[in-house]
Length: 158
Ligand SMILES: [Zn+2]
Image (cartoon, rainbow, N blue to C red; front, side, top):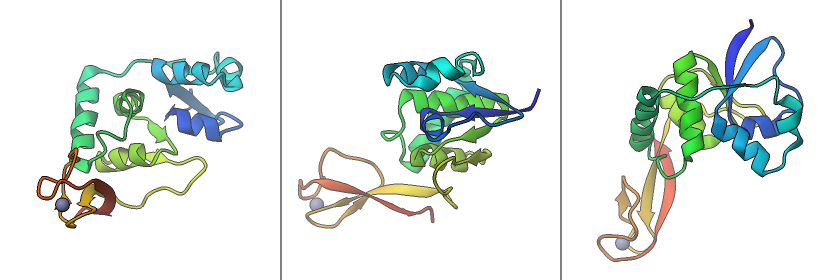
């Protein structure tokens, strides 16, 4: 048994080889995504990947964290499951997805990118009105003041 790592679809797409001396875990959702993209890795690595579901408790924790960082609409149900599984297993999370990294970072979980640079700190998404410039903490269908379209921006947490 090596150390445990959890991989999301973005990490798997960036890899040519599974990490050596690690036990690689994915969720059923990741396997489905690989199959949907007809990725050869699905059949190549099928027997090497451990497939496991995340606990409901960890999923709830992840959704709460994503709401805090503003990543709720940016992470898919599969993303949330992957982060939750890494929490359950106390495993390192391998991901190239910016929002997944952001939530993992917020939860102080160990994570590592595969094909890109890691984020250095938790960022918070905000939404700025294209019309009047008012900044919102939440994503809204339109500006509550002038009705213009909102554009997401990243800012430091504090
Ligand atoms: Zn406005």
